[in-house]
Image 1 (cartoon, rainbow, N blue to C red):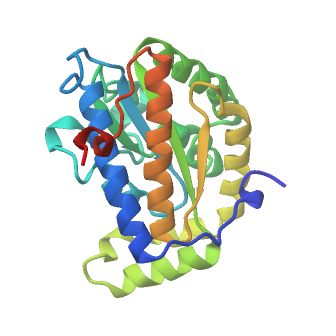
Image 2: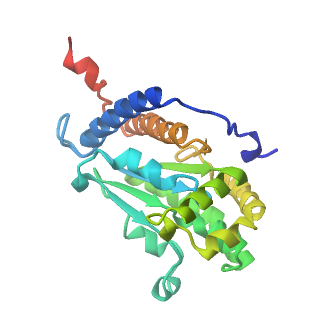
Image 3: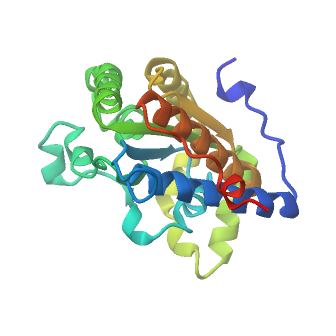
Amino acid sequence: MGVLGKLDMSQRLDRTEYERRLADGQERISQLRLHLGGLLGNGTLGPGLLVILEGPDASGKGGAIRSVVGHLDPRQYKVVSYSKPTTREKNHHFLWRFYQELPGLGEMAVFDRSWYGRILVERVEGFAKRAEWKRAFKAIVDFEESLCLESLIVVKFWMHVSDDEQLRRFEGRAADPLKRWKLTDEDWRNREKNRDYEVAAEEMFARTDHKLAPWEVIGADQKRYARIAVVETLIARVEQGMRRWGVEVPPPVDSMRGD
């Protein structure tokens, strides 16, 4: 049984606890973000922060991103969404189109999908040759390790959703005139390959999980639980990354306010 087979998809949060933990988590993310950006603390820039979200269609990546950055000043982050590469991008190494969007020191970026497309969708759909996606495992790990050692904290999330919950969300999107744009014929077709994508994901976890940027796998059948899991895990990983970089981790805001 792989990582996904062991995942507890039943975890839930009630609305009251969700709202409390979300408010606390968002405040902490804002505080840490300001410290990394040199706007709090001693004014020194910390490492950049790169957050990567992967997972099946309708697994809640967009909602998780809003939970992470929705309360931040828009000048303090960027969100980049990736789909299929352009002709010009395909004429370069597969990592080329991502490199130019990486955050610099003290900056923050969130990638909605990423270079893992080479060993997920490009593998499953046959857009990359076997030799190409096989080579990508080592290329990605080497790339991430270099980034983590030189300039970044990298946090990687896989948000997983069951077939039944995915279907419910698809049907909800189809029935909502303001959300139909999110649903395509390709989304429906991809459901037929869910098992193939899970096989690809399991090999991805096994071969690209490393000490500097481990995979954080989230059971996302309930959106409230998944969003809090992403927010709180991100906080823990940022604090860990700050210590690794020798950056002082500030105490939580509540302890600084006093009575």
